[in-house]
Amino acid sequence: MAVDLKLLEEELTTLTVEERLQLAKWLVDSVLREPRVLSTDAVVDREAEAFRRLHPTLLRNYPGEFVAIQNGVMVDRDPDQVALYLRVKKQFPSEFVWIAPVGESPEETYHIRSPRLVRE
Image (cartoon, rainbow, N blue to C red; front, top):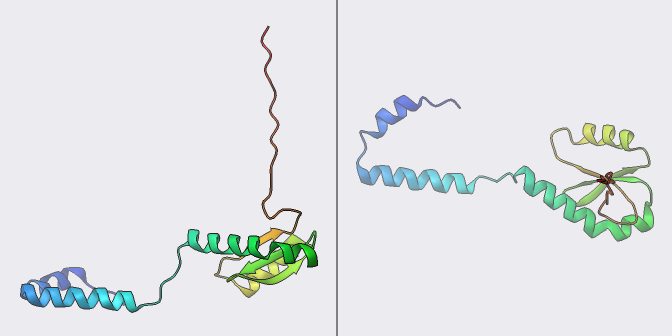
């Protein structure tokens, strides 16, 4: 629904202070009643935590495979990460899905080697 803000502003000037306060309260209440969508960060955190929580069972049942976690549950698995991604993207086209390898640890550790400079 498109709202002409200029027109709305003009209409609001005709209201008393009490009427504007009642309107503001109604707007806030109506927004708070709407279902909320989690922020992307919150969704990622939720799915990462679910993966960590499920990891012992996943390691026992699907070692070396990739798993897809959505809404806190495993929704698919495959040894082929690309095949899993394509299926998950088709099934959940606009939702975040955590895809991760099931290894010994739920957290991947990266070792980065760097050269040491020796000065003479």
